[in-house]
Each structure stands twice: as structure tokens, then as C-alpha cells.
Amino acid sequence: MADFMSFKNAIFLVAAYGVFWLGTFIYVFTLNQRQRNLEKDLEALESLVKKDQ
Amino acid sequence: MKQKADVTGNALAIASGVLVVTALALAFLWAPHETTMKDVQRIFYFHVAVDWVGFLAFFVTLVASVAYLKTHDRKWDIVGMSSVEIGALFLTMGAVSGSLWARPVWNTWWTWDARLTTVAITWLVYMAYLMLRSAMDDPQRRARFSAVYGIVSFVTVPLTFASVFFLRTIHPALFAASTAAQGQMQFETGLGSAKMGMTLTFCVIAFTVVYVALLRSRIRLEHTADRVARLQQELVA
Image (tube, rainbow over all chains, first blue to last red; front, side, top):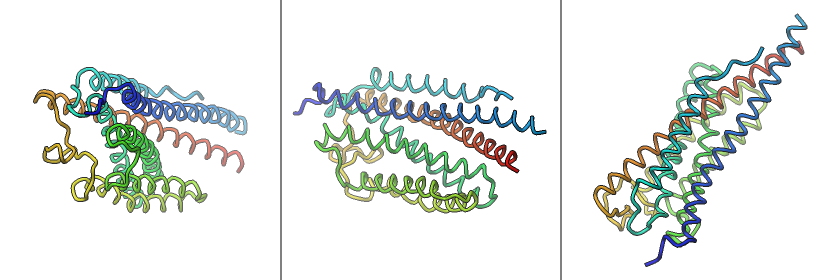
């Protein structure tokens, strides 16, 4: 019977969980970056609109 | 004017983090290993949970699409699009993790069996949603197209789910009658079976909370983008 707990198979297990963490982390990071950039733009635009008025 | 802190969003993020770490601990430390596959089987807990989230996300898109066609309210378009984005991400992670499980167990990264083929079709259909949407400039037309597409494309989801029951497949069927020949997992004790079930349920709940947190953030991002666009138009006018 194949030994499913060989080191090679443990790598697959670690890699699979790594995919979840990496995928989620990258997505959360990009969302946060985009939110921050948009909020900076929003602040700048709001002060321009106030100046105009 | 500085944006006020997103208290609910932060609370959801913290809750998601705690739940996922707990789910990880349960999957590795509490749930027993399976008789044949041993510890490689533990991929199953997160694999099933992210696939569940993917399908849930597409269902939310279906509901949001119907709501948009009824009300023509931009908020439903935002919900639908955001949910597809997250669903596509989770389905991708589900497919990759499934492939990593399949390599040691089936001795192949991929096979064109019914379940995997239907998942691939679902993935392609929703990736096309995102690509076609990004190619449309007119916001109303884009929203209408996305809503119709979001409703029609949902047909791939029950098809994928049912493929394991009605078509010939080597993919394990979680809810099938238990025989090893049908790919059902064999546990060392009856308690092991219950522990596996509870771990899986917890993982599904944890990832559902993660989905809600991500969806909220993505919707908030889109609303902020809309406000920026409106202010830019106001300045130009």
C-alpha cells in the first residue's frame, strides 16, 4: 500500500493550505491598497470641490 | 473629510481570522486521519469549504442580478459583480487545492471526469463574466448585461453539484451512500467520522464568514470608486 504520509505527500498538503492563505492574503492586500488609494483621491477631490464652492 | 473607520468591517475581519485559524487547528490537530489517504485527506476540509463559498457567491450573484433587473439600482450591480469576483477566486483555490490532493491520490494533476469538467466549465463561465464586464464602458448596459449573464450562468452551479450523483466520476461524493468503491472516506472509528463531520462544518462556517467580510470590503471599495467618479464629474462640469 502506498505510503501517503511520505514527505513528498506532506508537501502537497502544505502546498494546498498555502494556496488558501496566499490567495486570500493577496486579495485582501489588493483590496486594502485600492481602498486606501481611492480614499486619498476622495479626500483630494472633496477639498477641491470645497475650494470651488 | 477623513473617512470614518469601518468598525463592522474590522470586526468581521478579526472574526474571520480567528475562525480560520481555529478551523486550521481543528483540521490538523483534532480531526483524525483517513484510513487509506492518511493526512493528505486533510486538504478536503478547506477544499470543500472554499468550493462551498464559491457556489454560495454565485448564488448571491443570481439573487443580486434578479434584484437589479427589477429595480435598476446600482447597489445590486455592485453586489453581483463583487460576489462573482470573490466566487471566482475561491473556485480557483478550490480547483488548485483539489489538484494538489489528486496528484498523490489519483496519480494525476487533472482528469476530465464529470465533476472536474463541470467545475472547469463553471470557472470559465464566470471568468468570462468578469472579462466581458470589463470590456463594456456604458455603466447601464454593463449592469444589464451582467445581470442577465449572472442569472443564466448560475445553471452551471447545480450542474456541477449534481455531476457526482448522476454522472460517472471518480471524484468523492460527500453525501453518497457509504462504500469505499464510491470514493467515500473510511474512518478509523465512528467517533472519527463524527469529528471529521464537525471539522468540515466548522470550516464551512469559517469560510462563509470570510466570504461575508470580503464581500463587504469589495462592495465598500466599489461605492468609494463611485463617489470618486461622481466628484470628478462634478469638478469637470
